[in-house]
Length: 132
Image 1 (cartoon, rainbow, N blue to C red):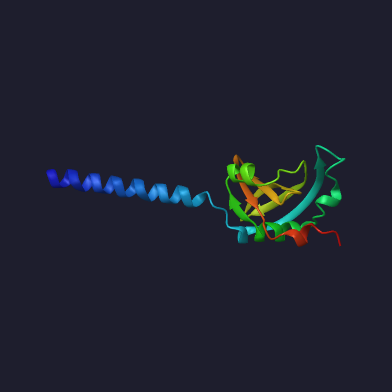
Image 2: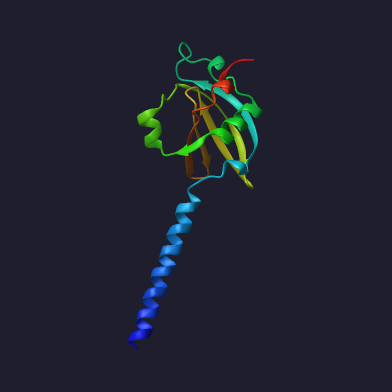
């Protein structure tokens, strides 16, 4: 009887641990699964200091941004990056899921798929923000 109780406890602990690993792994996006990036619009909260020329991204450049970027939490962006008042926004596919995205002039970004929002920064994307 005692051995059965121990087995049940061990099995429960193993299942709990496995579910935690799966849920933690699901939080990380795989940028290689990002496709069909489409730039829809430019927005700015301050047109005097942040203009379309500050975020000259087309569909291809936006895709390259996400492939180069690294995923971070919002606190990292807030504490260590410039949250620019202007951004381009659009849609993309993450696997088979349609998502919305924003890339800001300060090389920060977010992807929103349903209720989940993921944040990104790109420290080596200066070339993508240069006008051609």
